[in-house]
Length: 180
Image 1 (cartoon, rainbow, N blue to C red):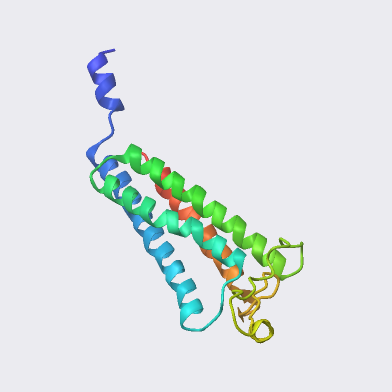
Image 2: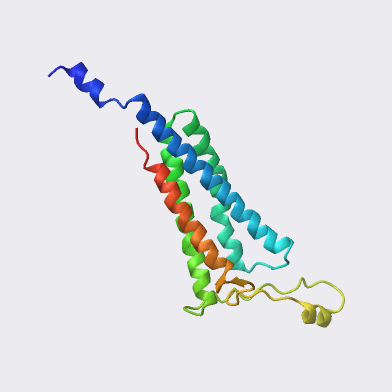
């Protein structure tokens, strides 16, 4: 058998390379936009609606904060045809979103009293400054991790976050497995 013919048949076609690149670009764009949207939603509920986040809520945001720039890097390198680095960046996004899904399921389980949450998750006390300490303590708003501040159709924000992060795991891994 001719070695040049075997090498030519092993090389991916331009259509296959384009399809892999498009799949990676699409996955990276979806992960970046949806992650930014999830963060915007969390900030909306905090700043506009007035729902103060508990410590577990704040921890659930961390994978999104990291995934947005990583997905944008994946988008750029995939757009320039570098499918290998895009695959790595998308796999990292998938792992970050898996961590986010785990944290969200854990938090939702704490809210439903399926398991105990961290002892430190009873909210922060007021800043102890000068003045009327008793008045500060009486007006302090303690944010607990085991009480859902908002529910829609029985699901809290942590429950919805579990679905969003799980869906983004699937999208990121779909892009990461694209091969020419």
